[in-house]
Amino acid sequence: MPKYLSLQNHLNSIPAHVNDVTLTFGDINNLLPSPLPPSAHEYDWWWANESPTRHVQAVAWMAAGFIVVEFSREKKWVHFRRISTTVQSGKEVKK
Image (cartoon, rainbow, N blue to C red; front, side, top):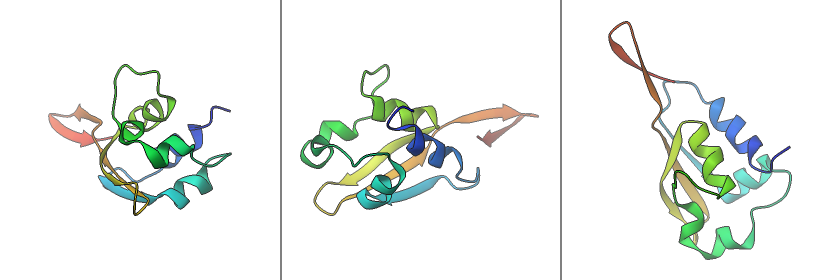
C-alpha cells in the first residue's frame, strides 16, 4: 500500500458539504503506516501543492480533491480545502 493512500482515503471520506478540514501532524501520523518524514517537519516545500509532481504526499491529497491552503510546522497542523467540483444538472456540485 502506498504510504499516503490512507491520507487520501481519509480525505475522500469527508462528506461533500465539508470544504475545509484541519489535521494535526499527529492526526496524519495516526492515518499513515509510518510517521511523517523529518522533511515534513523541516521544510515548507513538503506541503506544496504541485501538479504534476513526484511528491507522493501531494499526489495523495490532490487526488482526493484537496489542496493545502495553510500549515504550521511549528504548531504541527495543516489546513486542507476541497477544490474538486463537477457540474451536474446545471449547478456546481462538490465531489
